[in-house]
Image 1 (cartoon, rainbow, N blue to C red):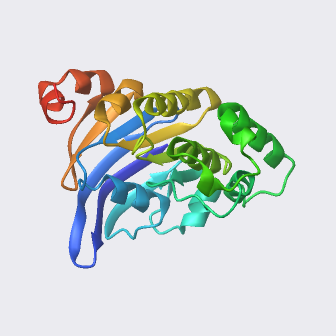
Image 2: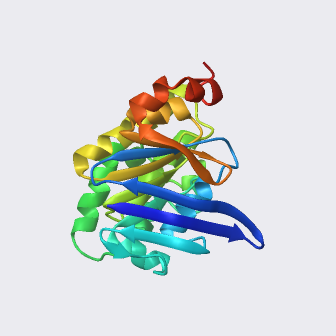
Length: 233
C-alpha cells in the first residue's frame, strides 16, 4: 500500500531524514519506534504532505505521490492523526469530527460519526461540549476519530500514547489494533516501543534519521539490542 524509497528531508540546511526506506502492506499495522528526535514525526509529516521532501519517492497504492499536495493525499486515502492531537479546542467534539469529514457531503458522514461514537462512547456523551474541556485521553480519542472521518485506507498515527496514563494507553492501543477489522492499514510512530510492537505486525527502528533495524514485531521485541535500548530490559 505504501512504499518509501530513499526519503530525505531537511529543516533549512539541516537534513533530518537520511535516505529512509520503508514499506507498509495492505492490512498491516507497522510501527516505527525510536528515541525522541530520531526523525519519526518528520517521516510522517513527509508522508502526509506537511513537510517537504528533499529527495526520494513516496508511492501510495501504486501512484507516486511525492509532489502531491496533502489534501489530495487525503482524497486518495492517506490520513494523519498528528502528534499532540491538534484538535480545535474552541469547537465542539461534533464540530471537530465534521471537520475531519470536510471532503464529503453524502449521507455516509452521519454513519461515519455513529461509527466514531461506537468506537469511543465517551465522545457521544460529550459531543456538544468544547473539545478543549476533554481530558488528554479523550482528546486523543477525538484526534483518531477525526482522522477516521476522512475514510482513510491508511492511517498515519503519531505518538497516540504520549502523556497518557497506562490504562488509557492500553485503550488507545486496543483501538489501533481493532482498526484491522475495519480494513484500515496503520503506520504507527511511537516512543512506547513495547506497546507499539505488541500490536504491530512488523516494525522499524529509527535512529538519527535512518532505519537501523527492521523485522517482524515479535522478533524485534525478542532482540537483546532492542530490549536494552528501548524496552528497558
